[in-house]
Amino acid sequence: MSQDTWTWEFLVDLLPELFSHRAPIMDPSDTTTAQFNLPQQGRTAASSSTHSSGNMDSADTAASPPGVPYQGSDAASVSTPSNVIASPPPLYCLIRGCGSLLEEKDITKHVREQHYAKRFADGAIGVHCDVPNCGLGPFTLKGIGQHVKGHFPKDQLTLGVDCPVCDKHLSRSDSLRRHLSTQHGATDE
Image: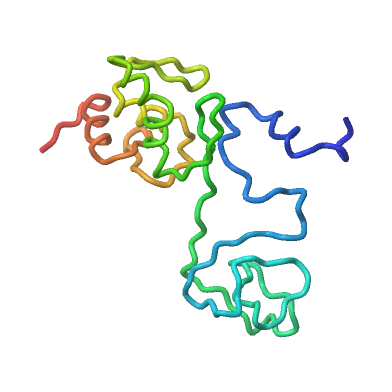
């Protein structure tokens, strides 16, 4: 297969399963339309959150994505708000066969409710992790969601706190206190 005939699906299949957890922002084969989420501030009724490449008039300048200048004749007069923060792309669920796209804040709830709740309803006391190459456990229903979230690479997560000693990423401040106590001998004072 030559490089010219590679498809997006072929390239995704080449990536290791555990590292293909980020969703593509857009279909790379679609060069005609891109979808952008813009803040409500500064938008006009004439503007849209969809930018079609090609013909834009001055009424569409508010629909330009942050950081991309308007390509019309008055491009110098268009400014991008400095307080625009891009949302991180969604994450793929790491449980084999799922493939759901999730926001970081929804990972633990999704894992508990979609993958493990039925097992506990059937009488299980604890479950083992279903992420490929893990199998740790047993975990409680609450604990399994936290554990699976820990499989995501730290640089892909924006919520939570980092350990100041070893730089481990933890999802909550109480997890950091427990980690500091058990791993680094720190005491609460």
